Image (cartoon, rainbow, N blue to C red):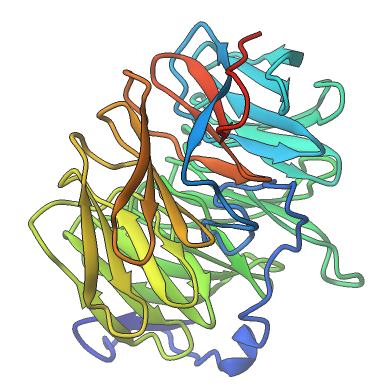
Length: 392
């Protein structure tokens, strides 16, 4: 394991073992998905927040589904269905086209974490620290695994590669541990201990999990053994998830910065800071841009290569919701109760819709439609403005 600091090259007393470029030979690979799928929080294993296809600049409400509690959980989609949790302790599966209920299943505590769809199952963590596996088709409980504190972030899934590289379900908890489970049975394979809460979701590349914690470190963990490959000192709480691309990690933190880290060397490539406000949002990253919400009530677009500001977009509330890039547009949501479509090129407002209820979860975009839940307890679907709104 190698220890890196952004303020110094090496700290004596820490174990050191360089992990090389081979770790990121698959840096541009991601969880392959058709345009009609968004099976994991942020859309792919690397949590890049990039949707496929194009998005209209003029949307309209297609449907709205009301629950009995606030929705903090970000939705995921697979096989024409949308899945999400609610503070009313229910996991729901809706028809993505018209918002009608297919099934719902009760748990024993609130569900703020985003679900994950993989291998025919839906996995979701709860406020009481239980990771659940349900049959994605029927909602039938398959297994439960109990951590020691709440689970706020989504799980991620590492596919089976045969021999000594089986499929693995990974997630973090407020008990300060990252867990690796057998996704078929829920049997724990390993746990990796940090020094503070894990609030975000682990990104995955080349059978390595990369995640930040409230211990102010970016951790790199071997998914097959649960052992540390590297620890990179960031210097402040990391509440959100990192996005990975081309061997680099992009993340915001409570020290009022967005940073780009070279994961092979552990070196800081650039840091972006504008005003003294924390970043609780996860970034969306494409080939040219890093787009992230901030508690300064703005969406920031940063040049991916240099870390320089490209534009800022002002909302009327904190932007803890994570943005999504779709083609030449950005979708952002704010605690001001609005959904925004923004031009990626220059930050110009193209469209907005006032839900009137704070939004802290993150949108999913599939086949030109935007799905997002609100703290008022409703799931919304917006699509191209070609037909009238529907409500089941």
